[in-house]
Amino acid sequence: MAVSPYAAAALFLLAAIAAVESIGVNYGTMGDNLPPPAQVAQFLKDKTTIDRIKIFDANPDILRAFSGTGILVAVTVPNGEIPSLTDPGNARRWVAANIQPFHPQTKINYILVGNEILHWGPQNLVDNLVSAMRSLHTALSLSGITDIIVTTAHSLGILESSEPPSLAKFRPGWDKGVLAPVLQFHRETKSPFMVNPYPYFGYSPEHANFSVFGSNKGLFDRYTKRTYGNMFDMLMDAVYISMKKLGYGDVEIAIGETGWSSLGESFERPRCSVENAAAYNGGLVRKYNSGRGTPLMPRKRLETYIFGLFNENLKSGPLSEKNFGLFRPDFTPAYDAGIMRVGSTAAPVQPIKRPTPAQDGKKWCVPKAEASDSELQKNIDYVCSQGVDCGPIQPGGACFDPNTVRSHASFVMNAFYQREGRHDFNCNFSGSGLITSTDPSTGNCKYLA
Ligand SMILES: *[C@@H]1O[C@H](CO)[C@@H](O)[C@H](O)[C@H]1NC(C)=O
Ligand SMILES: *[C@@H]1O[C@H](CO)[C@@H](O)[C@H](O)[C@H]1NC(C)=O
Image (cartoon, rainbow, N blue to C red; front, top):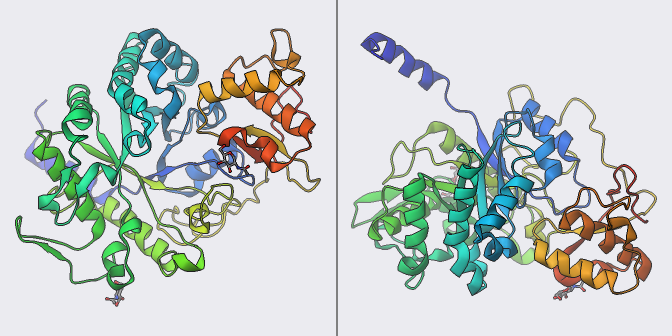
């Protein structure tokens, strides 16, 4: 189609004026005080400029809640399921069970195969990663789905060094062995290489502003003659250079996670503060919306998912881990990060109904979002061998549907927790259980309390 130069110029102007006001966010659910997904979806759509979310599983409640919102949803295959998904039949079944019931009403844009596999291992996951990515990609096309991209997110532990960016390269051993095949897959399927840069971890009080997009002298890279005004650009160019050195400079890059904690233990200050979190995430959002890119990737807007949406009170580790949220569980902003729609700068106008409150002290035990089906199957086998009544999850039982390992495990893990006396450790299940004050019962399937 021929477009007159004037029309083209006008279109360009329009595009420039309608500058993107959007960003992605990771929606983690490790909290016992978080609002229900339907309220989250409504809130994001009405009040914020967040146009895409990333979740750490394929939680059907979340997928259902975002249906029809237009908000993109990136789902994650739990790490433990990677080996089984190398099998084409299992990959087809995974897509049929987790994607097809929701897509395209819910705009699923990515399937992430595991989370930071190289960083966390174990080796059999690393060895099976690319094969699982390939079979999921094939399974999607065999299912007639062409608009969902398969990728996986890497921690920056994949880099041997990042400073200066020109000398960066991937860790020997991972470069040709694992990352080259991953990048080859991305090249063939036109999917982005996803990384999780955290200037947060490189913070030092002396160079605080370099980490949080504040004014500073910058870092000069004498090989490329570029000056870096912030650590984020430095890390992203380090990734780009490393990819180029391996022969994959043409593959797109996306950012799966980045963020800053607004509150920490005494030994985590001054890094963790509202000021730093606001400066970092605010700077990141402004940079994204400006489309400025990095010194070596100018004018490239890298798709970005901030970590995270809510403060999550059940995350393990120091206080900082629980305070990466842009919002508190009651939807009030933890600070101004420039993501509220105009006229929505404060807490939402509508009072938001909180989930069934725990005023009566009732608690339930459910699987953690990141628990794999194989871990959960072990929990079922264990609990049902301990004399807990597993009849309700058998065919014909009130909790048979939905007929998934996760849903069955949830019911019996809770039954066990209640019977044993509701001690926190009764819901541990080798770290795969989570205590919640929201009643998980649905329909006729009544959870014990
Ligand atoms: C850090 O950045 C802020 C905002 O850009 C600026 O006001 C402040 O003076 C900077 N601090 C230092 C030590 O350079
Ligand atoms: C839960 O189990 C894990 C692994 O078995 C263990 O490291 C952790 O200490 C346990 N936590 C509690 C609260 O018992």
